[in-house]
Structures are given as C-alpha cells and as structure tokens.
Image (cartoon, rainbow, N blue to C red):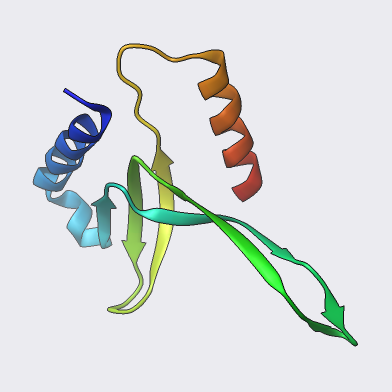
Length: 99
C-alpha cells in the first residue's frame, strides 16, 4: 500500500463517521494549500508583484463556510514504513510558515 492509498483509506473511514457533516467538516487528499505568500515590491504604498507557495497535502481537514468558501482546519502528512530526520525537518519548516 502506498502513502496515497493509505491516506485515501483514512479519508474514507473518516467520511463514514458522519458526525463531521453536522459541523460541515470535510476531508480531501492531494489538495494543494497555500503555505507562504510574499509581497516582492511596492509601488508607492500599494503592493506590486507577489509570489506564493502551495504544497500538496496528504490529508486536509477543512470546514465549509458556504458553497463557495472553505477554511483549512488540519493538515495531516502520512508516512508509511519510515520517517527520516529530513522528513521531520521539512514538515516542521512547512508548518512554521502557516502558524
């Protein structure tokens, strides 16, 4: 089983719970979420060029606000078989960007 298959299985099990629907909580795998946004320059007092960085999440827990808007609540990174120190550093740096 791959990480993607495992996370899809976790998502399906969570969706079967049903109690999340009352709070408009949903789950998604492979969703790209904005982690970093930077304004590169200003013209007078207005922001000019900008850049942003999105990372693909293994499992996203999000809440629907209405039909068009949603709010991320938790991002879960899944690992199978081994976790390296590189993984821990990488994910720690990512989460520090969105706190």
